[in-house]
Image 1 (tube, chains in turn yellow, cyan, brown, purple):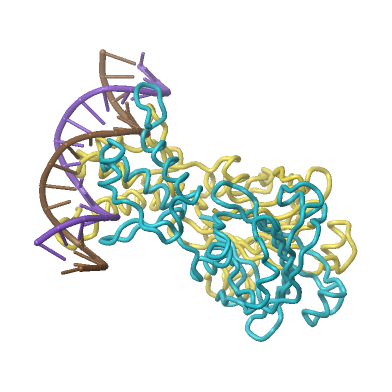
Image 2 (cartoon, rainbow over the protein chains, first blue to last red; image 1 turned 30 degrees about the vertical axis):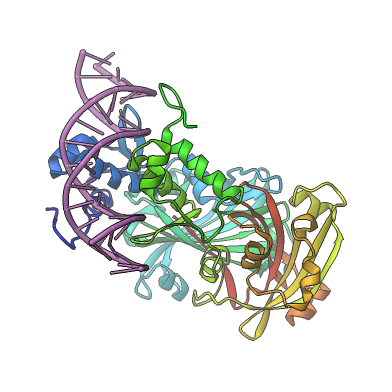
Amino acid sequence: MLTTGKGSIPLYIQIKDLLTSKVGNGEWLPGDIIPSEINLALELGVSQGTVRKAITELVENNVLTRQQGRGTFVSNHNIHRALFYFFHIADNKGHKVLPVSRVLKCHRKQASKFEAQKLQLPAGTDVFRIERVRSIPEKPTIIETITLAAESFFDLDKEGNRELPNTLYELYEKEFGITIHSADEQLRAIRASKQDAKLLNLEVGTPLLEIQRVALTLNKIPVELRVSRCNTHQHHYQNSIF
Amino acid sequence: MLTTGKGSIPLYIQIKDLLTSKVGNGEWLPGDIIPSEINLALELGVSQGTVRKAITELVENNVLTRQQGRGTFVSNHNIHRALFYFFHIADNKGHKVLPVSRVLKCHRKQASKFEAQKLQLPAGTDVFRIERVRSIPEKPTIIETITLAAESFFDLDKEGNRELPNTLYELYEKEFGITIHSADEQLRAIRASKQDAKLLNLEVGTPLLEIQRVALTLNKIPVELRVSRCNTHQHHYQNSIF
DNA sequence: AAGTGGTCTAGACCACGTA
DNA sequence: ACGTGGTCTAGACCACTTG
């Protein structure tokens, strides 16, 4: 199982890859407890310190979570993570408030060229497209267009009975077994279209902050494209560089 | 020096703080080699592993850099770091190109209320204000207004003989002993002013991406305010969430 | 009390850079 | 050849959670 000897890949890296694949292929699910460090070490025939080093790096990657006295768990998507990790809009005092969402549309379509390219799908593949307006706290501030590969989100549109939740990443994880682990964002300044203007109660041509986000799984598979157009009059996009 | 015993702060944290302060107060300068792990361990009366753990975290914080076979060094500000760490503008193919800069003005003034607040200075303190246009590669794309506390950057404006370099953070470090370690950014969409429009060769009112960055030292002291207004027609702000 | 992760040690050997 | 950081081990003890 593990290869050892001169010039080979370090054991802790091999263990890290092994644990990552257990999470990535669904053998271990979000919230599951994983075997203790000592048991993993016995099982793999290495010392506890080596397992520990592998786990430490996965904790830094937000793949696993440690709790002293309890054990090590596969990370969960909770509101806290959505808010402080993936949501970057704050008011001008620097406070983050998760906006409420009103879904305008949720339907199945053929992917546009743009969507297909961003999600690395063959042209014309079926996708779900969700449009929603998000308000902070009363004022409509963000228009989001979300695109998902239909294949991975079977019958998403039929779930319309049960309203789509505000924090979609939790839904993806719980209902579809898809965990969003990382994302790439591109930001631009654009002009509000006629529809943007109407929904956000602004004049046509008002500058909006457009965020194009591609969200990826642990295996770097793109699963969601999200285009957000934000009124940045009373809010801004916040980023910290460490 | 180090405290030990039940309920006290872990040794590796104390060592981390100790090493951090040596860098923060200038005892060790950027580029300096620090004592080897084994020597630090002997000096501090702990094992190599404990020193190692402290150093590992500082390397993750970009405070120190390890080089196998050579030693451990205080991190330097080089072009690579400026480009891949603090510079987030890329063209629409995703390539980053460091723009060239043309300085328009560099003068000493009283801080505006906004500048004083962002730099945590008393109202009316003297500051240097630099204005420059940055072009990628031929096309003027970004207008930057940079504000620095005059106190920390003595006679900056007199350096006008020697042109201001393109990568300012290297200058801060080499000429003024100030190392930028982290930054907070706020992004908004704004309208191009008359002057913006002229400098960027656009129409008045064109949406621009405005980035307000406050750059901090290792000790979290704000030292630079930088407001960048970017034409995002052929470029964008790129951010990765891991 | 038992089991988990968290800290710390002492020592072995490897990989790399320099002289 | 020597000194550096990088990996790995075996074992001790602490801090915390649970039964």
